[in-house]
Image (cartoon, rainbow, N blue to C red; front, top):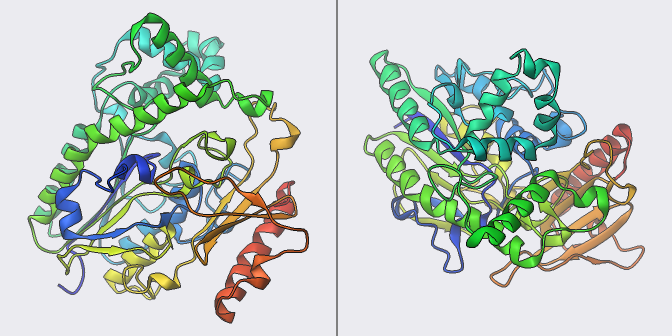
Length: 452
């Protein structure tokens, strides 16, 4: 076909690549793996939902589109993928379980409709677990004791939190089916963006929230670990309160959540591909950190745990298994989709020319309730080149190999005066592009208050 009949992008929120694939490299997606291209070295441009999703929606780095911890919203003059596809005649819909992809940060721009799934599903969770999870988040904790809560003004905010407490994937897929059927009857193509929260904190190991640890003491320790993870208390105290065994358990929660989600994703993709001409992309917006580089959860880091993501691409006019091992940026989803609809902005496709991609990651420091310690108030930029990761923060360069089966190596500070942007053996045009990205990020960091 000249262009895709429908375009469906499925994003498993916060899903690390190694949580998806496991030690054997098997993602539990037999249909997806047999019919599409797997990018084994894909990296998100940002480390949490807003910057990472905005990069996929715009093809830009976070400092370019303006949606990160410091600046918080996509610049109005930046065109989004949904806007571009609407110009090509597609009906554009978002079905999401994450409030961050809606209007609060401008990620709804260009969508004809945004279905907030928490408004369409009944409550199926334990009320004690609801209280426990809500009390764990400082923003909601403050609101629970506010006059607005007493007068009922926070109903919609609290309603959105139900996705932390129960599965919504079946509801999302049912909404997607209805949208596709409706658009087909109208003779229209669809662009659907689906955000799935089962792999996001607190990681759905069952249909409703449940613990993994055995016994009351184990569950208390697990609850404490979940609290400290989501609140990132370590950036306020300088100490990591989650012990190694509990950090492993949290990582296991995400792995189990994926094992439950994978068959549903694989079956739904097979259903979408049963009709010729549908383009389907499956991946994650970012990953989570469970102790790598001293980090926990998903703000402010440029670790492989937080940036290396699963990415599969099932093209509308190809049907074959393929693997691309060249490092690429997940923000090239923007160009790749536009390439397949014939838009000039899609000058290249990551599956055709992965070597033209720039896997660069950025993070802005996280202001945790105004109490982040000075030693954690820095922005970072990292890129993958020549089989290494090169990271810059506070005027110094560090390097580390990519994460592997045995874990993620720590960054090592390079000798003073070393600058990989000048010294790596890369083509002149690639060097110039990397230097430009780095210089622009430093300018941005200086403007928002903390240099890279």
